[in-house]
Length: 285
Image (tube, rainbow, N blue to C red; front, top):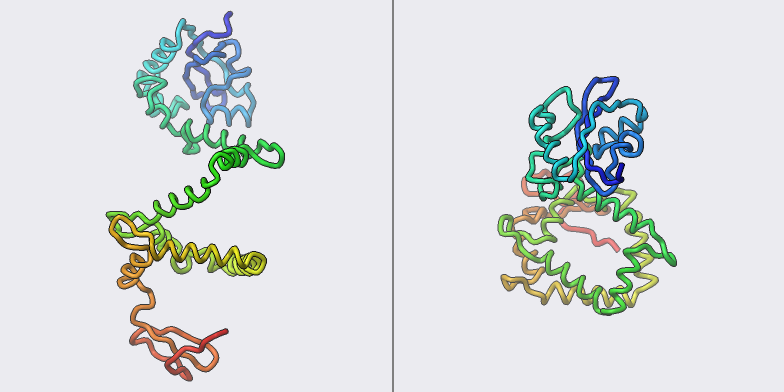
């Protein structure tokens, strides 16, 4: 029998009595390999085989075709006839209710883990590239270095592009990317508020500044210049936009500082002043 033999099949799980129907029509399609080397494209079937072995299933039917389209069409008609995706006697999750196996909708089908074929392929490719090391670098790092060698300004261009994207204002919310991210990590949701993270950030910042002070100062200078001069499509800088937003959303609006000589506390209007506290704030060095 030729290696390339498109075919339709039905297998049955012995313990539950449930069926699974499918077709195989890739270049290595061979019905002799079913439940030997090929265990269907279903992650559910593969998990059962991984846990209970291939003997957990038996082959109930194999029908051979001349072309892949014939195999796929027969499979689709069968699945729709028995309504496999809703039939309690079948393990199939869908009825191939798309135009063809190559239709974009087919690629959107999610398995029991919520992954499409695109997502599974992307994850596998990413894992491969990250694990492929040459001279201490993975594929991503090597590719980026090649691009950087061809265009030394690539890092600057990418940074400016990212900042421009973040400065775009959402028409629905009236906020740019920075402001929306700020709301997401506001208050207790801010990871930097956690003691273990705050300590790491503080140490890294101190070490980074002390070891590269000139570089840090130059970076801060460029950042401040950009935030103060770069304007968005509405003619506003990031600082202008932040000021406008803070007028309505400033969490400290309507509050005042009080202290007891040692500690500061910010109180909003109508909040009672603790005993021993008086207006003003102690400047801490």
